[in-house]
Image 1: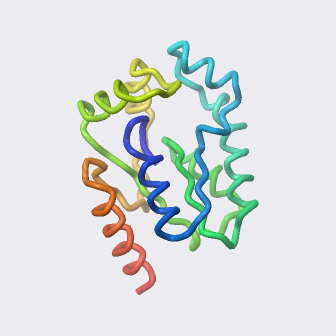
Image 2 (image 1 turned 180 degrees about the vertical axis):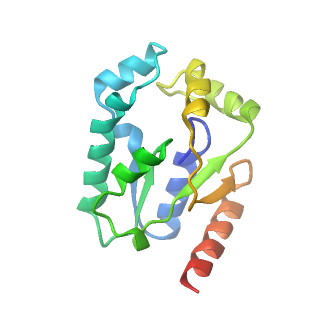
Length: 158
């Protein structure tokens, strides 16, 4: 989880490959109206997000029993609660990716995505820290991030 440009997709793909899991790109399930709204520079409201979050919950529950890696902003605790509905809490690992605003800006300028740079501040304003998440600095390379995840998972099992 994290704001646009934080590296969610990159890390999620690496985790799915490392753990032979199912990768789900949350952005792929946004309704067209949400995408058009963001493209036009308007932030989504909670009402815009709720149907999308419900779809993500359904997609995750379809593959319960598998290792599922979802790349999704999940900016508020209420959004994370909706995604986690009817999923055993002991099977979830939340990862919050953080990095400097300048890096987020550079990343967003150098990619092709429907989320415009003008909405970055609204995401930063909306972001609520996830109290039980593994918080990672997404300026580190993917190998380092995977090592930190492995350590976190090992510590959770101990």
